[in-house]
Amino acid sequence: MDIMWHANCYKQFSSAILCPSTKRTTSRAMRKKRAAFAEIVRNKFSAAVDVEKPAAATMLELTALVTVRKSQKKIINVMDMMLHWFGKHALDRHNQEGVVLHLVSTETESNRMSPKWSDEARLVWTKNLKMVSDQKSVYEVKFMVDPKFGMPGAITVSNGYEKEFYLESVNIEGVVDFPCNSWVQPQKVISVQRIFFSSKAYLPGETPKGLKELREMELRQLRGDGRGLRTPSERIYDYDTYNDIGNPDKGIEFVRPTLGGNKNPHPRRCRTGRLPTKTDENMESPVNESTTIYVPRDEEFEEAKQEALDVGKLKGILRHIIPTVTAIVRDGNFFKGH
Figure 1 (tube, rainbow, N blue to C red):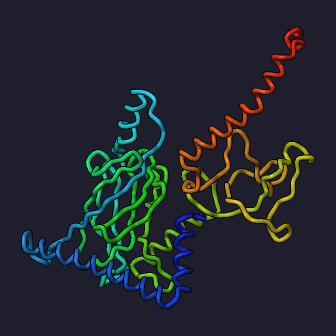
Figure 2: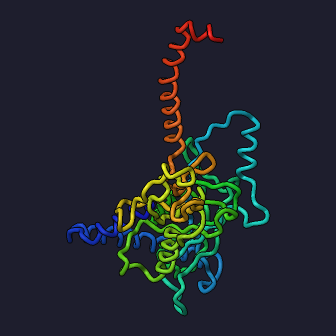
């Protein structure tokens, strides 16, 4: 399952078994955070009313810091550098420009059960940069909300760029934190907007009304529908038996039993949706040179870890090749045959 999903489940489970003193400490901390955010809203509202327009028409501006992790891939020449900057940051003119974000309140509208939404905020790589380091870039965006917006509980993200990016966190006014730690795919690849929730965990029965619909939507996105071929950009966690170990199309000696199910219990694997074999439609075609094993995008190795793994592979190959080549060179009969 998704790392963030596991973490939220753990938080929810642990919050249910906390000792009373720990619960009181957590409640006090949450009350302080709510009070701090309410004070920020009051101050902004007072300033807006005094300076700009009547209270009935005033919208509040909330500042958010968006942290994006940089790619660790090395740019080897000038041409690659130009493609990196102009290709990565080129806007898709046929779609919405930049990254579109919306804040969602924990509260619902008074006249209907739908949650309160902020106006959209756009993040453009070339305009909103605030801080930069070797590993991360921090961007600043502004959200416009109603004075009675309430406590932010979720944030939606739509990527209008050509490339995916790794969203690490979003922080609202230094008070409300959204730990994201996930890859956000372009809209042309996955059209559904991403949903991220604040660090405040809730038991199912205590989930605020403004977040219930988004929680259900996020769960449906993670579970999938059990159909179709899984692609590397997806983050769906549906499961299947190990029915792809053998390859009956090559012959009866390549037939292997299915691991999993009532007859042969076994832990499940992530469902891939590959085509069945021609000989047995209950068996999934195995992995070959043209296909890869599906791993949800957020579970793939980070670039540094993948690079270390590739170096280890190379060392392992050289460790076996060098002695073999040395033995061949020392064997004079090998060259006499040629």
